[in-house]
Image (cartoon, rainbow, N blue to C red):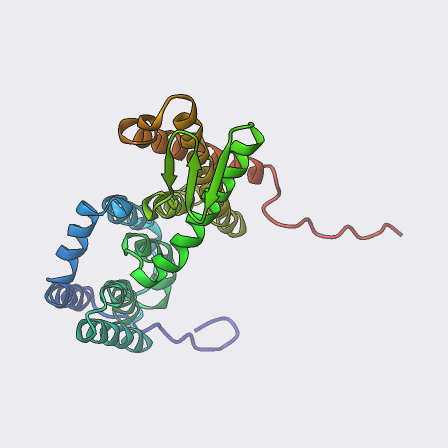
Length: 297
């Protein structure tokens, strides 16, 4: 009873034992549902160089959850049937993906099912608190081939065109034919592996982590994530141009093997430094707009 005479309605919460049982049953059901999906996903992380960063995504997501442990303890457990709807959507994605042999839909359903389970058993407050760790899991899921093909080829053309432009500015005789760069002593082809899609995905994940740890304002975190895209594309174009310079002045062997791989790591490090610089610039900006100053009478 409050001072005004109104009655405070207590929140409906589940006993801790029932919550533990529900979480345990959901965990077992989750393991049974994804017993074939997860091992194949890990296999692709191991054998696909574009997704080796997947091994870091899950530990980081778990760390984000652990970092929120005190806030989670303070939240009331309020199960919501809305979570059953989201859980049903995730299960439907899993079924459709399995029937159609669509790996991306199967793997994406994993994140949706987790979110639906949290919402169903623990409530909307828990889902809101865990939204970033759950969304971060998206970075571990390889993109479907149709998306990769649609993105990779334009990136290949951009990298080849940018590299050709840089070499022409330096006075190097060069000719571009599509994604092929023709030099006087060799021919370089900007293949899909050199499109920059690998560094783009990895830098996006790093941008999300960097923004999370260093910036409190949500708009700054999104800005860093958005800036990761042009930085990664520009860095890859610079790498292709550098390969062309090495091939011209040193020889065709400089465009392959150790030199090529090492240059990729160096340029990715440079891209991350540029991202750090962008974060420093954003750090000097106010987190929110200053309130208007009322004129003095």
